[in-house]
Image (cartoon, rainbow, N blue to C red; front, side, top):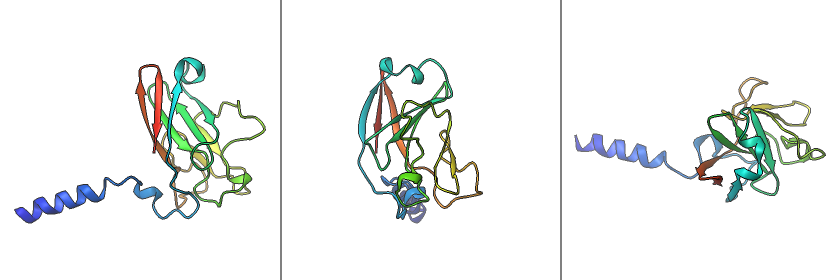
Length: 148
């Protein structure tokens, strides 16, 4: 019985690391700490209507895409985790940073990898090796706290 408890404890502890299993060994993304706060009063796209997202530059590997479904908030790195970091591997159009990306985002490389901003999984090209890198999102009053 004691060995069963130790096995359960070991399994629990090994699954609670900072890096999710789906982001381990990704040679294209760096482990960059993120700790930002977004004032929801200043971002109406993230409060009034579900199905919207915004881009926050200069955070993480390629900036951060924050999506609002109408119920929950999700935050993802805007760098395609299945490409080396180049201008085409960003999931945003740097010429139009005020663009609303909805609940999906596409890289600008030839394969046009498209990802869900709700699940982080690929929407085309079958199963890709890595999903989007997710960030922890916590709502605190009128602020979203995003950390990694």
